[in-house]
Length: 189
Image (cartoon, rainbow, N blue to C red; front, side, top):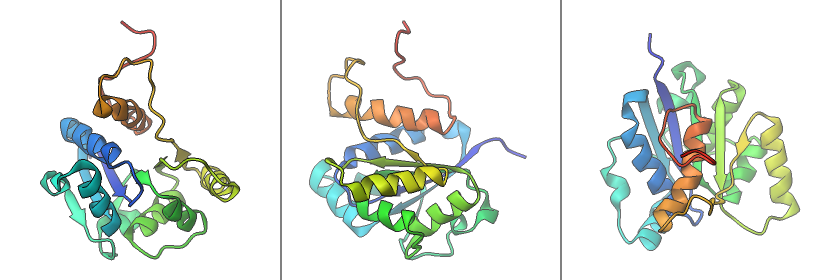
């Protein structure tokens, strides 16, 4: 029996690929605490990553990548016991489909599974401003047990570059997953 985490990471086509990159980089460093990381990227996510980060380094991570229509991925079923799902960044369209219970691809199916199994579900949304539709979708997901963790970096950490700023968000996500991670902590030396 293992106490190591099994994590699904979904990357949607929302702007903010830096958040996905920094999250995946951190998960690589924490592999001793992790049994499995399954990654799903939409086609738009790959395009946005290439546009924003000027590379296709998402292909270099040591995790299992699944096609968006692969409903045979282990985390498409609750029996695989993936305990955490992070959507980073999460587009408002993906959030709307999840809030409406539409499971039309692997990301939304995995979200449906994680929520029905009452496991840890974290959405890192980046869009602003928010419409009432967005807010209501966030409310629905929160009431279903999900956690909305907006991509709002903390500036009190003294971050010196974009990656450091993004890390202030992804470190919060890592904390929410219960993984041990060295990061900036308020009022700690």
